[in-house]
Length: 146
Image (tube, rainbow, N blue to C red):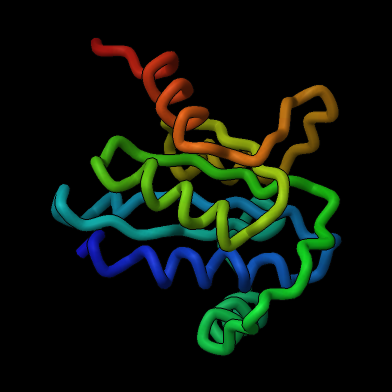
């Protein structure tokens, strides 16, 4: 249930900042095969599903959150995409708070698109620290009805 996810998503953001800086990281906020009231996350490391070692490290870091968290030393932004569930933008904001670094928000997209964007370097792509107004503006400007 999406109402139970904020703490886990925040901890995920803090865990990702502890991974090696050479990794390109992406998170897709989606639960594509679940009921519309549920939500979840899919992580991309270097444009792919995390290998067993990265996955184990991420889970371990999520369970052992430091207070206060270490500073974010990643030079590359965290790439984040969302689906169209009601809770997606809220969970995106919580993730970014945990991440604590620059974010490349690509908006409404599919998981394969997130993998592609998170594996690419776009030197002219704007990165920023997300606010709720940024998210609402992006969501409104990029949502089209068929």
